[in-house]
Image 1 (cartoon, rainbow, N blue to C red):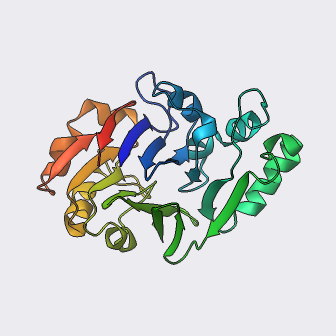
Image 2 (cartoon, rainbow, N blue to C red; image 1 turned 90 degrees about the horizontal axis):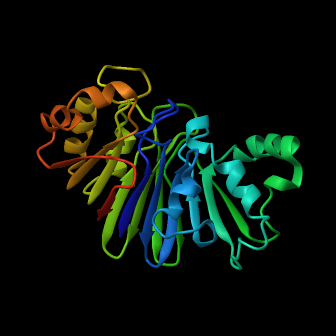
Image 3 (tube, rainbow, N blue to C red; image 1 turned 180 degrees about the horizontal axis):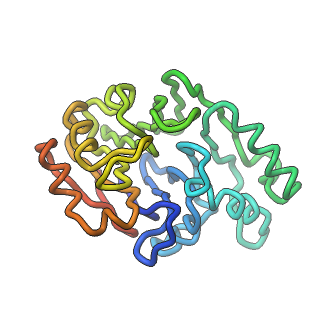
Amino acid sequence: MKLIVLGSGTGAPSLRRGAPAYAVQAAGLLALLDLGSGATRALLRHGLTFSQVDLIALSHLHPDHVGDLVPFLFATHYSLGYSRSRPFHFLVARGFREFYAHLQGAFGTWVEAPPGLMDLVELEPERPDAFETGGLAVKTAPVNHIFGSLAYRLEAEGKSLVYSGDTDVSDSLADLARGADLFMLECANPFKIPGHLTPAEAGRLAAAAGVKRLLLTHFYPPCDEVDVAALAAREFAGEVIVAEDDLVVQV
């Protein structure tokens, strides 16, 4: 299992950090966790293309996490470039269809993938849920951000990776991450903002979940002015990794 950080930032424009997006290669599949602006272009830097995407999982529908959704769906109409012949799976919390209907109202069929190529799977927003495809098991849990916010656990080839999306402290998230090989946690600012984690809170969550490694991500600019790894390490004894765009982590 391999993780590629496509965007480690937020909605704040930054030359250093793109909007939230992560690629996971596992079990011969390519999964995207969130689709922040520029995500599909960032894939190209790693020799990957939008045609190869087997699964997209959205943590929630805030603009910084879905900015490349419309461009991705629009790009599937490019017949000279989109070569996919089997469906990709699109995972999101139940209630997405209403949001999607508004996109269709604005853009019409240009935001509809070619017939039969998008498998839309709506997951439970208030309790754990699960999905499986081709040797990749996906488990979800609601987290404390906005209604419909989900964290994802990916399991394949004996390895596990958990992605929080945006969250405040959440017992459900600690339960989902129990014993994971890699825990990807947002820590938006070094000071407390409701609905988000500080580095110290991220460290405490990682310790409570008993994970092997912690990767901190989703940084607003103030995080680049402090040692976020050191702040998290006061609470978590394992390895702490600070995300950067194009960072590659073997899980």
